[in-house]
Every structure is written in structure tokens, then in C-alpha cells.
Length: 440
Image 1 (cartoon, one colour):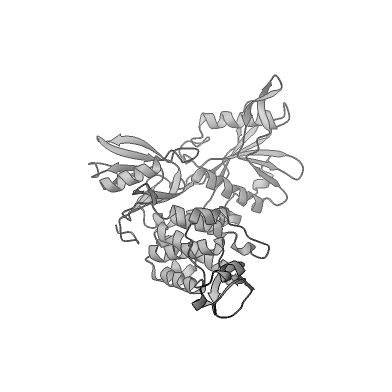
Image 2 (image 1 turned 45 degrees about the horizontal axis):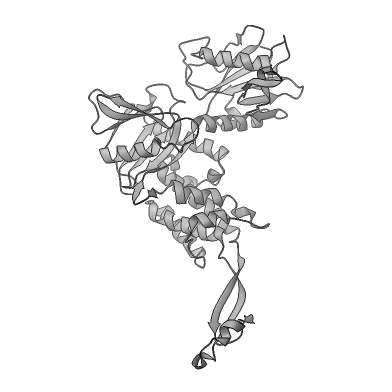
């Protein structure tokens, strides 16, 4: 499949297998064959030791060939040759649904909705008529970047006083006496002067202009190319950044220029993530990837703040431990969410970007270790001997009831499986009456 940049375009899902060379006979829908040069570039990017936290992919073999097992990271990769690998979420779907019409569009739309709620780089959405869910993610990201830049530029391009030293026929500013004294006699009528001019020449604007230049060359969507040209016209008086690292280090916005603040993240995305990096004399693939565990956690936290007004929603609380040794905390705990009801009742919640199993009621495939973890949270956060409500928040799948039967754990706490319908509007994502289900 051709990519918008003229190369190959591959659409895969998280947890899929990427295999080098030809597709093995009998391989399932979760296996995608990549040409050797594309596979090697993708492998170099995904196995980069510079990635934080969990590995993006795990090396393995399939039918005697080198392969990569993707994890929970989604996004896109672009190779030096222009090939694009688009990785979309699948955990919100039942197995087998990926082959149904519209599955890719639904996954892409859900991902963009979650990113728009959790990542400031995706806050300014493209016009609805573009139908971004049907566009390759690569072009969608380009359009989000252009729309974000347009929103900032419309509110004004930051200017700064720039020192100017030049030779001119008349006096402007102050005379540069040392240079004037060295002026040859035949040029004595020309004056060396110094003055300051209020120009849009500053690190933030130079990086923005360079980002728009890059985007204009990367996109193959006519509407995006037209928008890039319009932005270049507005930024016509801004020089291109000639030292990207130095300009990023000098990014400073004064009061009144706060509307340009979101462009730092957009410029970094365009100038680093969307373009292959050059290491020495060789270009290698680069990636714009999102850890779905983190995206899902942040998205759920935002949903809860909206549907539970008056509740306090905290993420990644780290002030409790299972025990102490010589006065030092031992086995620190970090639940994803700590919810405090207006009456002071604590609800401990973990977000799990994992599929539930509709055919395995009443636990629906919840792993033993997840239940053990919630029991440990209860021991550390709830009053001794009283227990308290515990929530495991999973993506909802067809066949899973919206109000699963609560599970009573040893010691008294109640474990509630909370499905969240990610394709619904935020106010309808959780089951009705969620805030009142503490005593079940």
C-alpha cells in the first residue's frame, strides 16, 4: 500500500507480529510482512535502548525468520526510504473484529479522541470535513500540527528587538565609531551604524517556520499543503532556524506570547519525530509513539473528573507502602488513581489496558496478580479492618455487562470491574450511577 509520502504504508495493531521478508504460509491476521530494508529500519528504531519504560517491541522469530512482537505502544514509524508503519490500538475490540469494515477507522478515531484529551499537541482538531479517521495516521498528525500552528499564528507572531549592524548612506541609531574610523577614504560617505529593529526573528518563530517548511514537503494531502503555503506566507519575514538544538534551548516566551507555548511540543514532534534522524552519515527510522497504558490512564482520569463532580481525582499517588523496616518504607505502592468522595471515602482504582473475557464471568478474565495488587492497595490505603471500594477500569467489550457483579475479597474490600465505553461520548462512557456504587 502506498504511503502519502510516496513510499510503502503498513497498517498494523498493537501486539501484532512484524516479520522480515515474505509472509509465512498460514500466518494469521496479526502477522504483517515487511520488506527486508523496511524491517531492518523499523527494528533499529523500535529496539533503540533510548526508549523509556517498557520495550516498544520484542525480538522473536516466526517460521525461521526474524520478527518483532509489538507491545502496547501505538503511533507511527517512518523509515529513511519513506515507508510508514502505522500502529493502531486493538485492545478495545474483541478478537476477530479487526477484519470488519470500518475497524481501522474506529480505532484511529478513538486514538485521536484520547490524544486530544491528554496531549496538548492534539488539542486543535482539523476541520470535520477532512474525515481524519479515514486518513493515514501520518497525514493526520501532520494536519494536527498545521492546525495548532495556525491557531497560534492567528493570535499574533512574537517579535523581539534584534540588533542590526550595517553600512548605510544615512545615520540610523548610533554610529559604530571603531568601524567607521577604519572605513577607507573612498567609502567615507557610507556610515557604519548600530540599531535595534522589532522583528519576528527569534528562536520560537524560527523553529516554527522550519517546522512548517518540513510539513509542506512531507504532506501529500492537497488541503494540508495549501494550509502550509498559507502559513509560510504569514511567516515570510521569519528566517529559518539554522541551529535547531540551540534555538530549542533558547525557547523563552514573555508574557503576552503564551499562545505560542504549545508550539514547542509541536515543533519538537515535527523536527524530530516525523523526520528520520541522521546518525553519522546514515539515516535511520524515527518514531512518534504513545504508550497506551499511559494514554488510557490519563484519559480515564479526565473522564472521571467530568462524570464525578466534587470528587478529587489523583493519579500515581506514591506516599504509601505495604510496610516499614527500621522506619523506612518497604514495598511502596502506586495505584493509578486515588479517588476521594466528598464525604472522605477513598476509592482506589487501577486502569487496565487489557481485554476482558465475556465468557469468563464473574471475573471476566481478571488476572490473579491484578486482584492481589488491589488487595495490597486496600491494606495500605483503607482503614484497618474496614476495607473499602476497589475499581479495576477496563475497556468495555460487547458481551461484558455494564454493571458486573462485585467481587468480595478476603478482609472485606469490594472489587468492582468498571467497564468504560471508549467509543461513546465522555458523559456516556461509564455506567450510570457509578458514583453511588460504593457499597455493593
